[in-house]
Length: 443
Ligand code: F0G
Image (tube, rainbow, N blue to C red; front, side):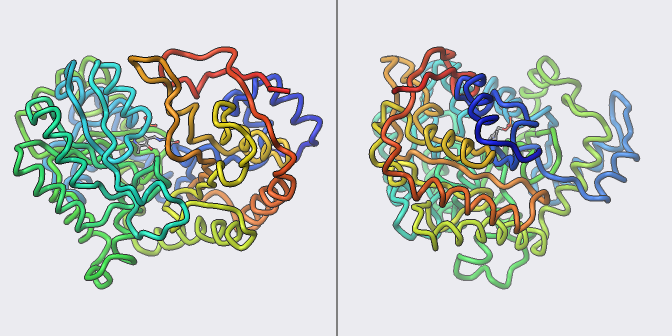
C-alpha cells in the first residue's frame, strides 16, 4: 500500500519464508499477484448491491443473475457457487471419477487439483507454439486436435468424461482460443461423444481477442461473439472474480437438465441452496451488473490496452515476455531473464523475490512451484515455461503504476547476471503447494 525501503522488504520477505503469498498487503506497494477478486466495482455495481434480495430461495437477485447468464451464453441452467474452484468441485463431483483422463489446454492449478484429487489425470493438449515465448501466434491458447486424438487413442473415449477448454488460457499467458479452434474441438468431441466444458473465468477477454485478431469477426459485437463461443460448449464453470468484476463468486451453467439435476445435489451439499450457492443476494446483483459491463467493447479495450502498455514497455527494454501479450497479465519468461539460475532452484520464484526486493511490486510465479510434484513419482514437474506473471487488477491501477513496474523490472534486468542462485523448499503441502510453500535461500 505504501512505499517501503529495501531493508524493510528484506525483513518482510525473510519472515514470509520467501513466499509472496505470505506477505501482508500493507507490505506490498503495487499488487500484481492476481486479477482475481481484486478489481474495482463500478458505481452501478455498488448501487446493485443495495438492491440485493436475500431470500433463501428464489431471490430476485438470483433471477436477474440467471437471466443475464442465459442471455450472454445461451445456457438455460445456472447454479451459483462461492467461487470458480467450487464450481469445479461441484461439476467434477458429477463428471470425474478415478482413472478418468481429462484433456484440455493447460488446466488451471485448481482445475488440475480437483481432477487429481479424484485420482484422475489432466492431459495438456495445448499447441506447441504456446511454449515458445518469442514465437508469434495470435491464439496460443488453442488446443492441438492431434494431441486430443492421441489421448482418445491411448486411453479410449470411455475414460474421457469431458474436455476442458480454458478461455483465455491463464497458464500459457492469458492467451486466447480462436473461434475456429473452439469449432474444431466441438467437432472432435461430437465425433467421440465427449462433452465440452469451458473454464470461462476470462471469457469476455477471449471474445475481445477473437474480435480484434480473428478474420471475419471485426464487425461482430462482443455479445455476438460470446454467444457463438458458448454455442460450441455443453457447459461452463466460472470464476466470477475475473470477468464478472466482483470480489467473490462463481457459477456453473449448462444445457443439460439431467446434468443440472445431478449437480444440484452436490451444490446443496457443498455450496448452498441452488438459488444462492454460497453467494449473498447482493453479491449476485453486483455480479449480474459486472457481467453486463465486462462484455462491452469499450471496457475490454481500455482494460486490455492497459495490460499491453506494460508489455510494450518491457519489450522495448529487451525483457523477454510471452508474445503476443495476453489479456489479464504480462508473463515474463524467467528462464530467458535469469539464465544462470538452475531450474531446481525455482527460477520464476527467484525473479518474483528480486522484483519485490527491488520495488515492493508483488507478482506471482507460474512455474515449477505451481506445477507441483507428479502424483505418482513425487518428482518435481518442470513445466516447459517458467513464467513470472504481472497480473493487472481491473479498474485499479493507472498508467503511472505501469511505468513504475516496468522501471523496477528493468532495474532487476540490468543486474541479472549477478543473480546466479535461487531457493530450496523447507516445507511444502502435498498438493497446490505454491500457496503455502516455505523456502530457504541457497547461498
Ligand atoms: N480457472 C481459471 C482459468 C482461473 O484462472 C482460476 C483462478 C480458477 C479457475 C479458479 O477460480 O479462484 O475463483 O476459485 N485464478 C486465480 C489466478 C486464482 O490468480 O489466476 P477461483
